[in-house]
Length: 251
Ligand code: ATP
Image 1: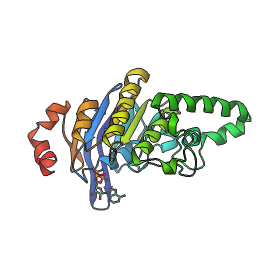
Image 2: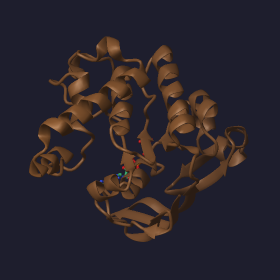
Image 3: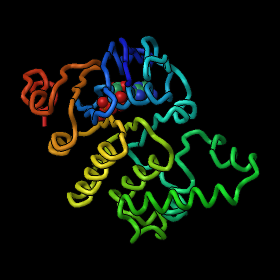
């Protein structure tokens, strides 16, 4: 589904991504692990269109999408979430869902709908969809709460919910489990698995929690120094000498 070919992203002398090649298969939940500074977030930023790479290519279903801006990729069903959730804190959970994820100010789907002139009908559709998402994620108890009052884990769940408001095909999750308590982590993990199995979502997720990774991900890719160090099942990667030396052995 996604193929990354010999990708480089340099910032001056810093080679954040330095010749990474990898594939994310359709229907997979691919885990991306590696030490701090390995280039994982930069790789996400390039794939999701926030940076144009120094060199190399990103293909989506065989089409070259290298350097396409986030809103164009969004239209192709490729979305990402952020390590720090980007909720609208003064809006409720339901209102946040109804805003539809939009990483490009001025490109909101709402503006297209306003132009189309069928606002009332569209608003009904979006409200119905938001209710479905609220049911799916079992967050009706906080649906009318201001998003700013949610816990860190609930905000991550809301981020996931916002990806569900559009027909996402592939979602890149940046540390969706970071700083989240065990109970909510399980809820988030269950939601990811159900979206994968029941709705056909493909995921690629950056995580540091190996238990969470082992439960959800196959395959797991380990990056170090801007390139791919190892790839395999969670078990294989956990036991890989190079991964232990570069990453797991350090903690
Ligand atoms: P972490 O697990 O800590 O989030 P990471 O694997 O996601 O790390 P990146 O955030 O991609 O790593 O960073 C890779 C390297 O690139 C780091 O040395 C970082 O300081 C550098 N880097 C990332 N973005 C920029 C930027 N915009 N300008 C300059 N250097 C950058």
